[in-house]
Length: 471
Image (tube, rainbow, N blue to C red):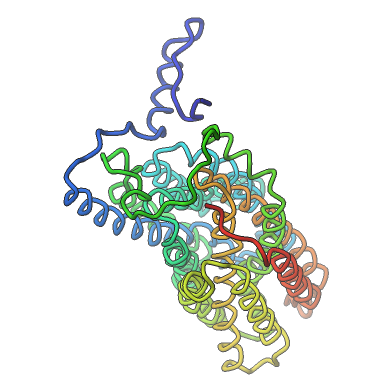
């Protein structure tokens, strides 16, 4: 057996006792809790499972959604920061890329750790540290400070998705996964809606600093709430595995097959071509997704003539429709297509490209058409995030490597998002002109870049048409 990465080791006799004890306490805090003797009262098992599942689903959905506000603050403050001559569009592209690189590699490492960790403490810690970083961001205007802090913010934001996926895989069974994953994926939309409306209002009222400090204070409180709502694995409460409780088992292990450790199962995903193709499809889809999230408000202000609040309200249609898109994706793929994801991926990808064309090529002064476009885009892109960003990967990977699968897809997704920040910032900056002291931006090159990324994502996802759920 391979030891758990979070399992505390005995202090070295040669090392300082104080340092060894401090390290051991740290590791014990994050290590998965001990298993309790199995409960025998079926009524009590049923009661605890039902209660814990409601609390865990609420905590990982609402908590992750609120935590999202600490990831998107930069999107809302770009125009006042540029207009205040604090940073240029190219510098904001560098800062924006930092969070995605931090998140990409944080999600990968944290994905492997989450399979071994106490999810209760793991998730709450990530939200708390991210909140504190946002509060500090509101009190500095140094470029290197923003790059470093925003990169660190990405790392701690990377606790959320793998931790939530591990919690779901431990508390919800195979045949439930699509539906509950769809519900959990609404967290993205909740966070985006809170940011585009709430943070935009704070920036309009308090200036750009409010876009960081407000979400930071909110998430300090949310971290505390999550800590008290979440639980570790069922075995730590004396409960049987969820597959036993729901009688929802995959195919039995062949006789004579050696049982592989969690670490071996995690490494096995690197040998799966389908996972690599899925990762590239997700990466290109995230280029478009974060192109709109990061630059959408500035695009609407410059190309369509909207104010900060008007642009924020229009972008808020995306997450409103996204909540329905996440739930509809999980239900449709589970119920209408027998848990097959590729058919629904194709439908959502075509809808997304149509919506983007409506957004980019509609004339200014078409609020109804733009509203329809953002509703269609929100519905479709969030369906794709649900699948390409995690659910499909967990279908293809061993169940004990759910966190690692999420982390692997995540590193590609957010490297794609980070590259998008640098590319978009450069393309938009190249088209910047100053007339009578007023900056004007040309988004033509960026628009074709975002649209092209979506087409590539569609083609890559279509390659996996015959991929099936792994038992």
